[in-house]
Length: 153
Image 1 (cartoon, rainbow, N blue to C red):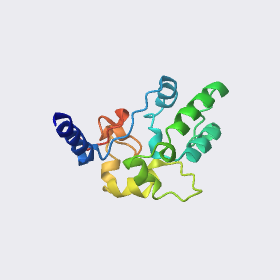
Image 2 (cartoon, helix red, strand yellow; image 1 turned 90 degrees about the vertical axis):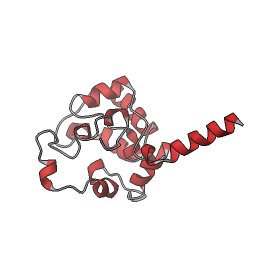
Image 3 (tube, rainbow, N blue to C red; image 1 turned 180 degrees about the vertical axis):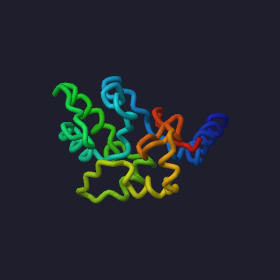
């Protein structure tokens, strides 16, 4: 009986809003270091695999900057991102993001996804704050974002 009660408690805790905005943390040290040199290394759950593939194919112009790196490192990071992509792992957050992606779409900016925009409908002055600076600076408002926790702080 105790295991049934514990199991039910776990099920309830996983279905509460506290888990609604959490994704698997990105833990690969190569990806964390390479991507984290310029910005938070985003969890792959936010884009489909084809988007990550396109991004890795265009590192010479990564949002206006060169993020070119050795081919073996590109291959490693591509595998990490594609294996953990929203359309490969599923999950609540991934499902919310994928719902708005065209079947053949390859979005590149997580911050342009309607699911993101709906949750982040703030006045321009909020995005202009010195501690925020851009919509892609998730840790400014979500202190545990790098661990995959996007609950409101």
